Image 1 (cartoon, rainbow, N blue to C red):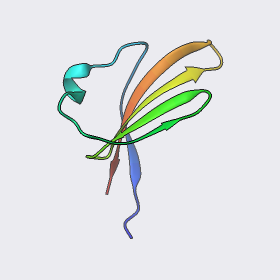
Image 2 (cartoon, rainbow, N blue to C red):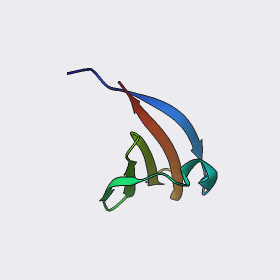
Image 3 (spheres, helix red, strand yellow):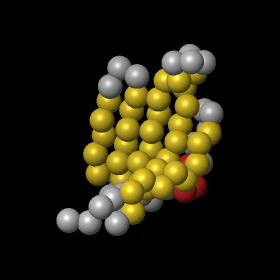
Image 4 (spheres, one colour):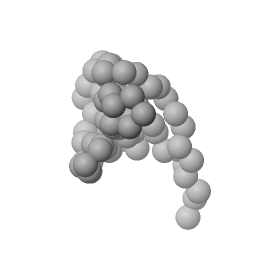
Length: 66
């Protein structure tokens, strides 16, 4: 099995670049007390999470390579 590495694509505060996500197929969703993670079929993850230090919501996208 190949090793997977996470590649950080971008981080924004309250800003999701919808053009980059349009047309993508959602493969899975996980919801916890402090975060929502959406996995797309191409291996991209959209994270929406609570930054405990600033008490604000933040977003990031990551893509698993390999």
